[in-house]
Image (cartoon, rainbow, N blue to C red; front, side):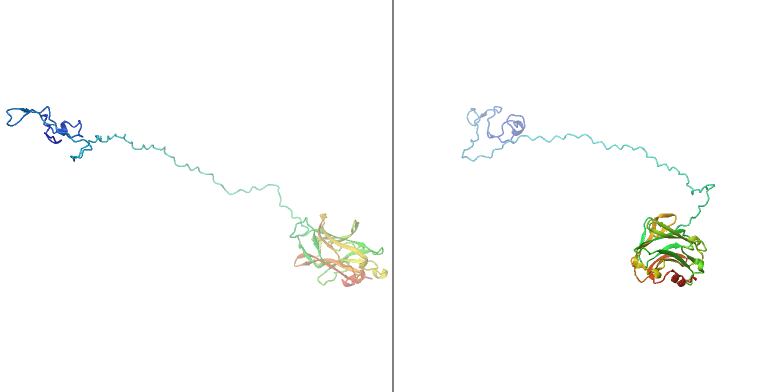
Length: 322
C-alpha cells in the first residue's frame, strides 16, 4: 500500500509516518510493505498469504511525471540569546567641596604724609640770562631786520655783546658806543652815553670793555637787573674815528659781526649777526638795538649806516658835545 507522510504509521506506534520516521530519508516517497504489518490474506483466496507490494519512485530523468519530491532542509536552530552583562549605572564620584575664596582685608592706604625737612629753606630764585623757545646749546644766526625776544623784565640776568671787524685800510680805527634812550628817543642826559671815554652808565647796567682778543675787538656788557626804568632802548653803533678828516668809510672794512652771549657762559654764543653790506657812502653803522616793550626786552638787528661821525650821532640822540 502507498503511504503518505501524514498517514498513521503501520508500525503500530500511533504516530504519523513523518513523526515516526522523521530522521530517515524523506526524499523518496516509497510504498513499503512494512514488516511491521500483518500479512494480508487475499480475499477469496482460501487464506493464502499475499506479500505486500513495494512501489518505487521513478529515477530522475524518467519521463513519467511524478509528484514533486519534498527535499528536507536541515534544521535551523533557533538563535541562542546570550544574556549580556548588566551595564552598571555610571558611578558619580563626589568632588571635594571647594571652599569659598577667603577675602583678605587690605590695609587702608592713607594719603601720603608730607614730612617737612627741617633746615631746608625755599630755593632762591636766580635770575636767568633770558627766556627763549630754542635749546640754549644752539646759536641763533640772525639777519638784518630780524627781532627776537630776550625775555621779560625781572627774569633776565647779564649778557655780553661782542663785536669785531677786519679793517681793509691801515688808518681805519673803529669804535663801539651805546646810547641809552628814554621814551622820547633821546638820552636822559649826557651820562647815558657809554663809550671808550665814559665806560659805564649811571645805573651801572651798561659797561664798555676794550677786548682785542682774537677777532673780538670791543665788548659791551648789559645787566638787565640794574637797568633804570627811564631807559627804554639801547642803541649800539660802530663809528670810524676821524672818518671825514682822513676820507675813510665802511667800504674799507670787512667781516663786521655781533655775538650775544650769556655773561655766565661766555664760551657759548646765543645770537650772532654777520653784516653783509658795506658802502662807501657811510661812516657809521647802527648794528643793533635792545629795547623794552610791554615789559619784554627784545633784540633788533638794524645793520644800517649813515654818513655821520660820532659827533653827528651824539647830536642825533641828544648828547651835547663841545
